Length: 324
Image (cartoon, rainbow, N blue to C red; front, side, top):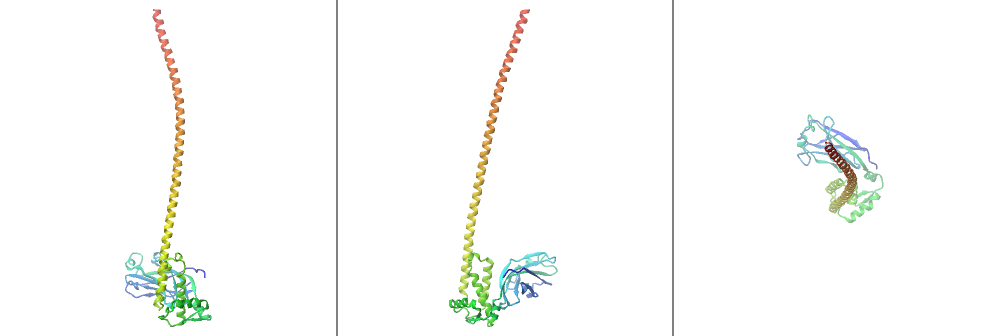
């Protein structure tokens, strides 16, 4: 299924008070699915923070990315949460969001609350609708250990129970549709953790941890999957460390190459300057020699003229004395 366009919905809370209980927004449509926002003004689990959650109103299992934005009354963005991506289904009462979205002290700063009004915008993008649970109700079903699944899933589920026979011993839900949805939920989580660790994002790991927690709370025994999650997290961290080191070395090599190239260029430039200066010195030396030769010639001529003048003066003196 191709990515659908992002949809935004704005929820305005008048007379916002830190003491009141949770607020639920009207339902809105995004990606062909119905949603609502749940807001806790004094936190749901953390009592000094604003908590915000996105929940699905329809039973279809879907994967969506979303983020929350706080606006002032002029519509200007004053705060935005990081984007999350998660699986949603109202039959699992799954809501995703931020229990520590924003410290309550921060809300008192200028721009967040104007006239005691809190304006929350959620941006939702449905990436994938996984309507396998509905397909199971329409198509021929296979019962595997009390879970109704499609023929295409029967082998996977059977192997799952063979490896972990007590996986659903304490499973709580009795409704068949809900049981099917939980099983699909579990299969998708297993599929995620089978991917190469380096291809799993940090957000996906965070969501996988939360999904694992919800499946465990429903009664699945998933200690083996917790171990798998820890290993994947460690391998991902290690692979990223190695990649970082390789990139660091590559950067160092590139920097050294650049320095060597610069040094070569600098050396070449210095050599060029030296050769140029040597040529200039050579030319100046030649000109100086010429000038010296000229100076020597002029000096000889001057000396000859001076000698001639001296001789003439001496001759005149003698001639004048003889005449007397």
